[in-house]
Amino acid sequence: MRTWITRRELDRAQIRQLATGRWITEHRNVLITGATGVGKTYLACALGQHACRQGYRTIYRRLPRFFQELALARADGSYTTLLARLARVDVLILDDWGLAAVTDVQRQDLLEVMEDRDATRSTIITSQLPRDQWHTYLGDPTIADAVLDRLVHNAYPITLKGPSRRKEKA
Image (cartoon, rainbow, N blue to C red; front, side, top):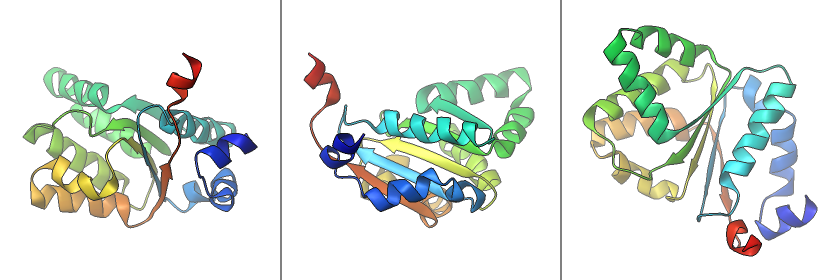
């Protein structure tokens, strides 16, 4: 693990602090960015698994499937139930933020979910996009402001560096 922390240029003190789980009790978010293959999903899942071991309810979703799940819930009438479930989960991990353009409905869904979780639950986001490009990714400036205000202002930002782990294995 020590080599992984060094190669990814992680702040050892920040990782120790996150390992305490205090970020969850304080309802803070974790925003993990970096290039393809640097370990964003690995780190997000490690934090999620640690949260589970500490007794916190955790859900992991890739953002494209997350949007599909919300669309299906809209169609079958379980949308409100799904939103309530997402509002109650202690840690929501949304992986692959920014891979595909979002629709107006998806932007609105994201705002609903983040509004329900704001200052009451924790969210982990992983993205290849640097945080300064998230506003553009979300498109609509008003909704982007609202979503990012709920995510970014109380977050631990982590930017992973180094070569792709997948290329190292090849």
